[in-house]
Structure formats: C-alpha cells, structure tokens
Length: 260
Image 1 (cartoon, rainbow, N blue to C red):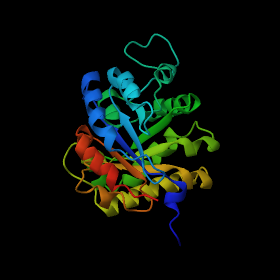
Image 2 (image 1 turned 120 degrees about the horizontal axis):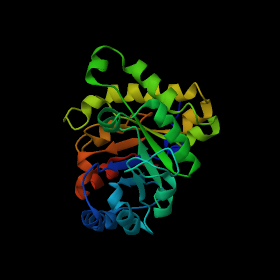
Image 3 (image 1 turned 180 degrees about the horizontal axis):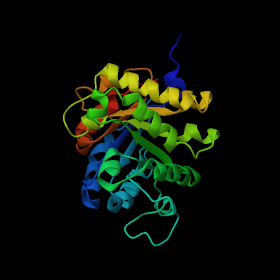
C-alpha cells in the first residue's frame, strides 16, 4: 500500500527548551536559526517551546516566519486563584500557537495527573491552541512489558473529554521516560511500535482522526539519529530536548525530517 503520510500528515519538529534560555538567549537563538530555515510546502512544521518568560520574545522573533511557538504547560482554568499558573487566554493573547501538556517531568516532578490533563486538553483545543500531549513509560514499566497498558491509560484518559471531531487537532509525542535526558534512545523498532500503538488507540475513538493525528518521537533525538528515528510510517516528527538548545543541531534535525 502506498504511504500517504506526507500528503495528510505534515511532520512536526518541536524544540522543548525546558528551563533554558531567557528572552535574550531566545532572541539570539532565533537570529541564528531562522535565516537558514526553508518554509516551502515540503518542509516540516517547526515549533519552539521556550519557558514562559521567553514566549513573548519568541513570538516577536518568529513573526513573519513559518515557525510556531508553544508554551510548556498551562492551567485548565481561564483565570482564578492559582498562584504561579498561566491560562490559555494569556497564551493566546501573547500570540502563542500551542502548548506542551503532560511531559513526564510534569507528571513525575509536579504530580500532573491524567484527569487534570483531560481538562487541559479541552481547554487548549477550545482556545485554539494545538496541544502536544506527551505519553510514555518508565524503564521499569518497559521491562515489565507494561508499555501498551501505560500508553492505553494515558492516551484514552487524556483524550477522554475531547469530542471525536477535535482529536485530529491534537499532536501526541511518545517519549519513553527512560530515554529522556539519559543518552539512551529507543530503537527504531521500539519507536515505530509505540507510535503504531498510539495511533490504534486513537482509532478506537475515531478512524479518520487516527489517520490525521501527528505522532512524534521524543527521547535523546540528535542529528546523528534523527533521520532513522523519523523514518517509520507512524512517526510524524520529533519532540527534541537537549539537542534543540543548539541552533545548528536543531536545524540539522529539522533537515532530517521527511519531505513531500
């Protein structure tokens, strides 16, 4: 069967900077990165995800370019007594395009639950933001052959409150926790199998949405392994951590993405 992935699913290459780069470094990065970026029809969708304090600088620097900007988290309420939190309307007002939700560091270090994520997904989509939902298993869960069960719980619960017609607006990033910041990387076979599992889970909700939703791989993606990891039919891009802090390395990963 002919692979029509590139016709219906434009690859996404997203840079998750985590707690790196204030506004000055953000502007410097984009001054070096943007001039070499080609925004033609065959190029992947590129997303920069800086810390909250750097969002405004990123949006300003990316204006007029094909690069989109996403936040790294948000609250599910539009406003209220939630000290230290940021709402979807605030992100929209800044000109932000999307938001990363459910990263394993948020789940493990800050107690993020699937039930909260389900509420955040609805809030993001309703506000016009593209959610990049992160899912993935720990090393112990992988050794115990629980990967499929973990992905099933996370994907189905996190998407539970969305209407079927909203599902195609979601980007899902499979990030095995044991490969984040460890130098370990999932094999191509592991990435392909997990991405296919995620797509099948979406298909249990809506077959058409399952063909349109973009599924990314994340976990020690580097210029040296990007082309191989991005090759499987069900992998539609990458969520890049450490390597995205270098404009040269991130540009190389963007260049490795399949093109139409």
